[in-house]
Image 1 (cartoon, helix red, strand yellow):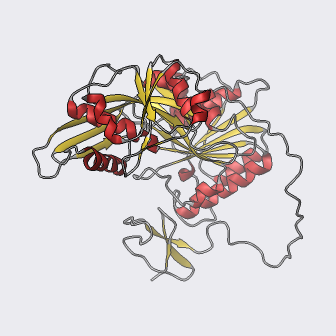
Image 2 (cartoon, one colour):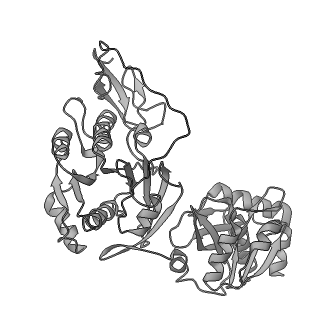
Image 3 (cartoon, one colour):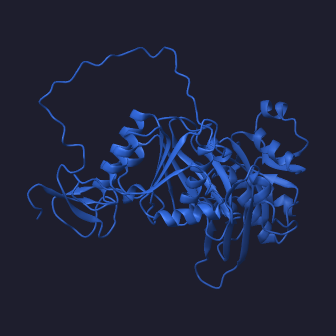
Length: 457
């Protein structure tokens, strides 16, 4: 039973229970429920004695205020943010431990502080000591940048300092290490994260500085703490990448001032994170031609066309149940494509182990990769390589038809720019796209998966 004035809150999803239990019924996490005092979240101390004021309503039409964005000098970040940082906005940055979140934000603070006008940048670390941050800055050759550095975790002290500053950019690394005295729970708990974020966001809106909040992620890859944190901020960025690859992907999943699903590509080097202006060339740099099971997919990430290599390996299995291993793509989508190939093309894949890999560590989610995956699987199955100068894209339906995808011209122009000579794409891309297509590519249209076999006969 809970004590008077207390409740039990799940630290993963924020669900509230009257008594303690080992497993959260809402999210399924074990040992994540902690006792907290009621009214300690920073929101329940609202006075009801004073009457509210009448609010004014306006029409939808009217002049918009021009947004003066701050150009950080890091083009990939500016692209993901929608063209630059908006004063007064709050950006939540999440990613796996050691992926490079602190490195990126230290580079951002150093770059902004060196802009014309010398805007003030404050880097507040709650995880590392000052000497540790200085060591990283020296390795990145940023030690001469006029960044205001501090190590603190008490929100009241941070707010008191920022109130008297002329900050343009403030970085909190990380929000899970901050705490507020009025909240009777440990740092990182749902109540602490929610209350600390609320106080910082309120100050950022009042003072008009850009606020970066670094957030830890759970083992499922989502940002730890209450889901309401993502609703409170203006932009949510995920920093993705595999430890074994030197590529890093900065992806926007929420942006009130720009497009979502936009990506920025970085390369991790000894001097820090370097921008990759042409990610297609980098993803295909180590590709070997005339290899069976390999093809190039022309995809779209946000507004940017990206060419990546899709690799498939098909080999006989020695077990009753064949293995399906997928890296960088949806395993359920692969199962659907394999089922279509078996049902519509007569291929026997039930006795084969199939391995699928998106080279370079990029994760693809769009269904336009269906056709490229199918071609790679058939190529590996027949041990016949596809032409190395061909790009592929198209969605596969359950009846075996090849469906059109969005922005075909952008995909073709990117392929033409990198020297590809031909493209395999859906037959019904439309007369308008064909007429406006001005690329020097040989177009091969496929309307049904049964015609795929003809490429390898």
